[in-house]
Length: 289
Image (cartoon, rainbow, N blue to C red; front, side):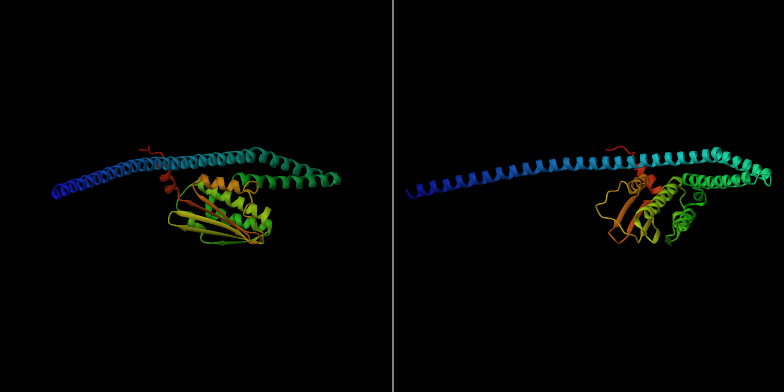
């Protein structure tokens, strides 16, 4: 009797233990299946995210390339307009000045009032020619013909002469040389012009400091004034900063603003050398796997 009872108890324990082991095994298998499914979902999400990031990078570089091409077209159009103004309107004004000068000489002594009036007209023509030369130079900066370094130095000297605001140039302007890229040079020069124009219009500053730096394949230009500064939530549009931002994007660069009320404004532009930018642009054309 005892032996039979013990046997039943032992069999029952074995059955309970077997069921328990079976339940644990089934639970373990379910967990493995769930883990494998989660890993599969995670791998798919990683793959999709990788494709999305590469597509986003490709789109960004494409937009940069299009913005660069647009800026090149704008610069080419400015140069064409500048040449047309110089060759057409400039020549007409010069001919008019010569004719008025000859007329003034021929009437000297015989018609004093007419001579005086012709002198005033000639002075007006001279002012018009000077203004026209300024417009032509803005459209087609002659300073860039000597390189970006010389153009930056010339622009700062002219800025101080015209506006009476002192300037300090830190760094070696020749750090921008070594890689020929007319489109980049023109864009950087336009950005400097727009930055200085913002100082005149908004900063009420007495000094501007321009710093140039080259670190490996990265070129950096910063423009800092000691003016009134601006609020952190001030919108970019309406102050010329949006145009600067677009031009920076066109050459694949980065643009930051650091300003506070009463503390002046610091604009920092950094962009890669042309080979590095071209390499990144070319990589954007590779097909996605």
